[in-house]
Image (tube, one colour):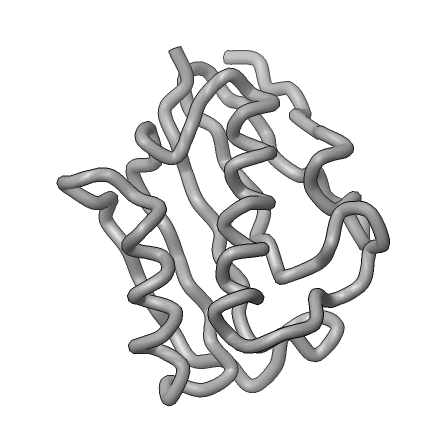
Length: 127
């Protein structure tokens, strides 16, 4: 099985030694996205809803660059700095995903890159 990197200028560039996504066979493994504006590389201003929407739009861009979409996501992981943010992130996240939604884990972590409040990674099918 071959693996290849996927990248797009419509999502933030990697800020370390990793790829935006790796395609392996018919699976796409997307690196976690934090609420960075792809144009500036800075955290977006605004409330948690705006930050969650930016994360989801970044994921959409990476998925699109690989020829797939949020409808093909089979697994996601949400990282939160505090579980107090769970309800708001869950509400916005749910607006972006199809029914039935993918399998998911949500975990609280001690910290995230650049002081972000959330990070989401996904695995999706690619035709």
